[in-house]
Image (cartoon, rainbow, N blue to C red):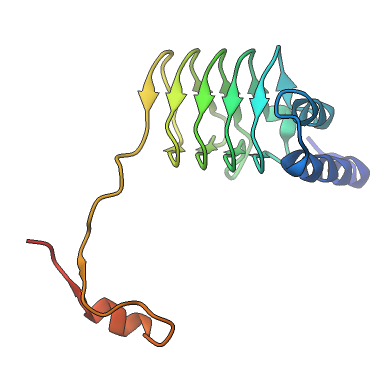
Length: 161
């Protein structure tokens, strides 16, 4: 799937404009369509969303799909894969979807991926998935200030009871 330098450059320029342009349901989807992203129906693409620069044609957003702010969809990891965000599915803010070579990662119809999730396998329709909320890991006895080395900080960590 070799592309010309001009096409690759145009895709990147359009992607950059789309990341910061207004119009989550109008201009951004149009710019991504021009790049080759397969978009059917009305979708929402949030600010600073990264949709596969090198192979935008490997991304599909179906009618009603929503991809929120700063999410990343990568359709190639050591080879081409595909990502399909199904009808009325939602990808929460700061999520990362990555498809492996030869595989199709599908976010099923009506599924919801919570914010800050990392997804590398398909999600069943109408399923809510996500990471657990942040939890305490250790007690900090030496603050990690501008004057503290990383080694000092690590030495000051204490296990929780």
